[in-house]
Image (cartoon, rainbow, N blue to C red; front, side):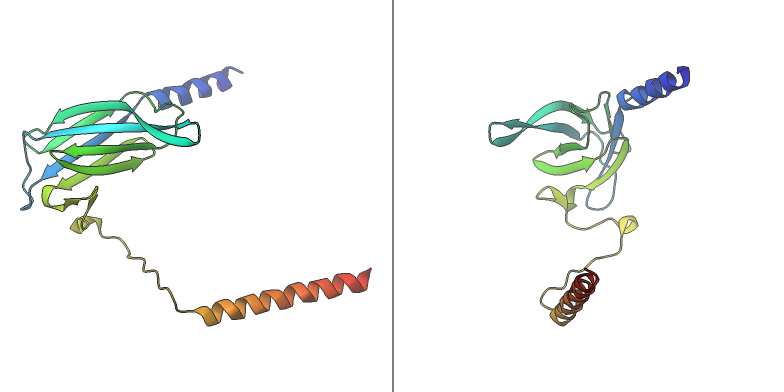
Length: 163
């Protein structure tokens, strides 16, 4: 019983220990920008009648240091737990953030922030590109559907014979 209580206490401590969002701000040339004000707003979503509305539950301002860094320490989990939804405001530009808690590192270049997202990834953040091709492959889909129907019909006939 004591072990169970200690595990519950440790999980509660982890949940309330907080999370950090570390932002590094760069110019178009890749130089760190110091003295820039960054704001972080985190939202919770509430149901009001038939609508869902966002409400700001955390708001903090930070000024970048000489290395262009700014760290936000969120001490408490969001009401209701779950993912953290928010917005970073850098001057007049916005960058949406979404993460499950814990520590998050966000490098931002001022010339890449457009409409809430970066226009392109940093060189160190290149991932496999997934391309969705539409309009092709219908033959395979139709063949798969026909095979599935034939299989279901075969099982139906087999079940009917055994009755």
